[in-house]
View 1: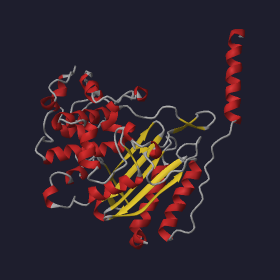
View 2: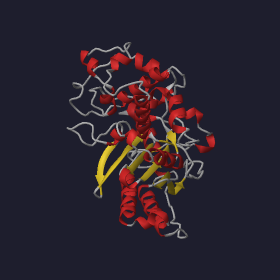
View 3: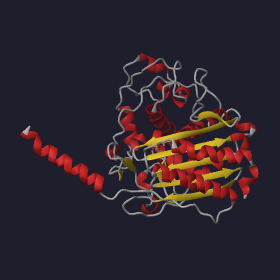
View 4: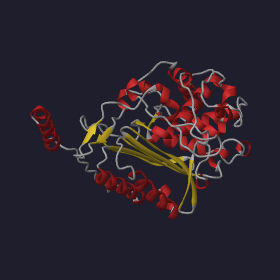
Length: 379
C-alpha cells in the first residue's frame, strides 16, 4: 500500500485542482433586436449552446440563391475568449466527404472515370491481402459498400504536411475487407481517403489543390481549405473536449489535422463559405445535362440501405427528402443538411466533441419553421 501512496496523493490533488479550477460556463444572450425569423433562430441556438455548454458555434442558412442567415456564437478558445463570427474556420470532419464525392463526379463529367471502374484498374500498385479487393468499384467507395474496414487511428499528432502524405499512406496499406464488395453498407473513412488518391492519380494534381481549384474557388469559398496550414491564424478556432469524471471542458492540445486523412475528414471551413457552397451545389442539380451525374449523388444508391446516396447521407424530415452529412472528430462537431426541392440549406459548425445531439436539436426545429412558413425565410 505504501508504494501506491504517492500516486494516490497525486491523483487526489489533480482531481481537487480539476474540480476547483475555474470552469467554463456558456451564457449566450438572445439578440432581441433581430426580426421574427432570425430571433427564433437566435433563441434556438442560444438555448442549446447554454444547455450543452458549447464554447463556439457558427450557423448558416440559405434559400434559393441567397444566404438568409449566418452568424457566429460564443468563443473560439475558452482560454483566449476570442469571438466566433460567420467567417471563423472549423474542422468540418466528415462534411469533407461531400467535396470528395463531388470531385469524383466532376471527373466522371470529364470522362476521366466511370462509377463502375474497378479500383485496381486505376491504382494497380495497390497492395492487398484479399482477392475480393479486385471487385471494389468507384461507386462502392462512394456509398460505403466496398467492404473495406474503417480507419482505426487517425494519428492526428502526425500533422503531416508533405505533398506525398496521401500517396505514401495509401500505397503503404495492405488492404483487407470485412465483407464482400456491394453486399453490405459499412461506413469507411478509409474508402474516402482512397478516393482522394484516385483524384490525385487521374488529375495529376494534389487532392487538396484539385478541390481548391475545381470546387472551393468556383463556389467563392475564399477562406476554406483542406490544408489546415493554409488557414489564416485570425480565422482559426480551437478544439474542445469534456473530462469524463469532472465534466470540465478543456481546450484540446491536438488539432485534428494530418494530410493523409484529408479526403475523408480535413476540410476547414466557415458557415459563410459552406452557405456559398450549398447555393452553388443546389443551383444546377435540376439541369437536364446533369441528370446522370450530380443528380445521382442525391438518390438512394444501395437498396439494402436506402439512406446513402453517393457521398450524401439521405433522410426524410417533415415529409421532405433531405440530403447532407454529419461530422465529428476530436474537438469538433458539424452538420450540413439540404432540402433540394425547396432549395433550402442549413449548416452548423461547433468547436466541441461532446453531447452530439445538439446538432439536430438546433437545425431540425429551424428547418421545420422554414417549411411551415416560407415567408419567414426572407424577413
